[in-house]
Image 1: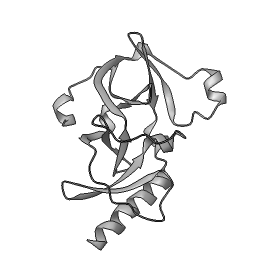
Image 2: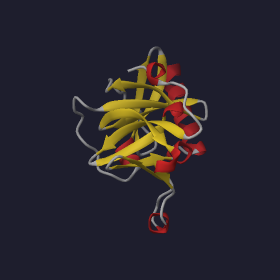
Image 3: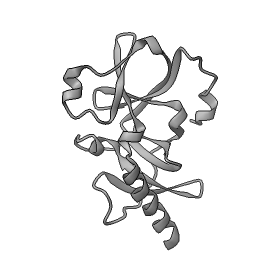
Image 4: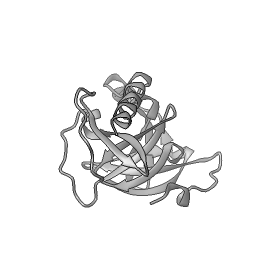
Length: 168
């Protein structure tokens, strides 16, 4: 799926998001941060990396680091299935693949349907979250990509991709 195919002009009153699942929960990321979505590729393990980094993949000639989104959020890893996808996002000018259980859809979410996190959630470790979206009877946890992949981590991950590219 090419993201450019689904991107259209959005209004000020809505946000277009890519919805994916991790377990039974739905998560969303702004389509503006998404470069592409692909089936699970071959991933090359790279030693001495961050605990949630699975390794690197070759995306059309570019070495892209890949993270296990479940591990990043403190969840157990899941087996790779036919539905498993890698959502390639751009953060701080660096492409990073995020392994997710399944990509559900892209949707336009009215800003009126996005609520900030409640004080109960904020008291917990919610640094990766920027709000909760309501789409029909579903709740979608909206991610703050600048927190999921913090600047220092992005720099370390970018160096990992460059290091692996130099080997080839």
